[in-house]
View (cartoon, helix red, strand yellow):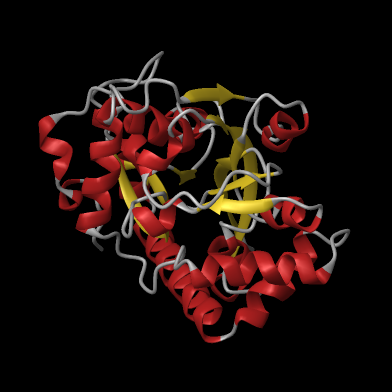
Length: 300
């Protein structure tokens, strides 16, 4: 009999989490007698709450929430640990329909623009808040426009934003409809702890073997993705059967070209430091002892 584990994730199925989806659709979990049930949860803080409340066994999202002081009924003494790195660079791209807007090479090129993003406290919103904080005078005129998850492209059509930050495959869909990618944060932040699998200390301590299996399967999935882009494209087609295969191929190849997925599940200390610094710059209270990834990385 298979063991079921629940994984809370962002409320949209997407291409940036293909390492997990490849592990699921290629039978890597099945080989160990594990069935994965996805729980579309919402924003990054909702994912963390789902894990720490016991609604989900594992979370897939921004790992900095493992150290951001929790709100609500979650105990401040509860601990969580990163299990596996999923996105080691910022898996966001800025799309526009305005032919006048050219490539954003640095944050300073955002002067006077309206940037659409996911709602706070998402990583996209945090990055823009951090940019404004780091360039207060220069980016004073830059506006951050939040929209509910899934409505980022709508901001462009409604002329409420000049550039919308979004994820794949929705970027490639917008591109196929005449949009142009002008902003790739992964080219600016070369190493960044963007998304990871993490779990509570209590679940890990009671399910050590299961956690180690998850680590093995995700590593195998990463190996498959890097060895054969076609593997990722085939899984993406199962996730989005209604989409043009060319769109999905472009989405997967963009993630590979921009090195969104790591070659190893172990999160980078440099990437962790960059992600934590962004949260600090954006005004989040981060405990001083959380600066080292070794403090919250699970090691079997």
